Length: 332
Image (cartoon, rainbow, N blue to C red; front, side, top):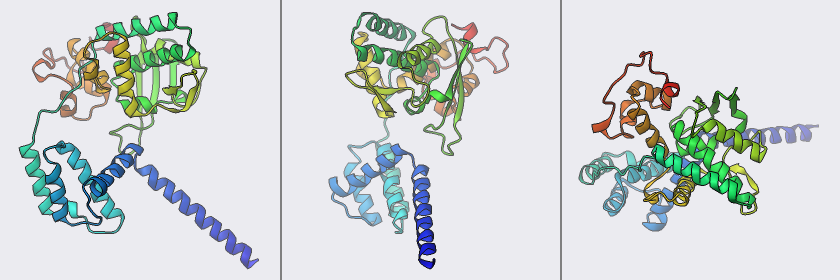
């Protein structure tokens, strides 16, 4: 009896330990975990550093790569090394005055204008949808047809909601509802800036042309799915992967679609082109800054303005209470 109780307690403790480990892992996003692991590997393997380390060695590491890596990349490397030391129970060399001064100096000396992705324009959307519709009609390859339906839905929804690639990759069919063919309502369970995992509700209306609601509906009908990730990998035989496409693969999907649509300079576009393109479109249509921020989900003005050319931004500033400010129904 005592042995049985002991075994039960041991099994219970093991289960609790596994659950604790699972929740701790869930607290750190997969992309962050991969980025931090890569940063630690860079310090140890590429630079030849040993952990734990000292503020002096961290300073030498920063100086070694100051000419080659962007300050933002170096800051990410610092965050990763800082976390490693804290989780291993060592004092954090990255928080020292010595390291902070070096990092500030690097930012001052190597401060450059950040690169911005080309914004996707309405004419690009028209070319893309025409190209994908042609593939759907002409192709006898099931994989090509499914991929065209998927890519059309991804591009149109990504543009009209100003989604980031990580938000698109996390969309689940069970979190989407098409309301009387008038709009698509949905829920994003996680996003890059959602640090507390509260999720985000969204809505996008059905449009007369370039409609994201129709595109999602058509894609769902083709793959006959009601649950799981919306945007999935499709292999050469047209079989859908159970997992969603990764956020990192969406820029490649977009560039491939742009290339197939004969859009020049396709390599200069990225997944940010969807979000930036929508911001430019909304600006041209006279949306107020408050209206755009509320719709896309930007928390501060700086975030919104990074997606616009400041000289062109909001020439006719409307107020949020303007009766003519009704998003798409008066604009498309």
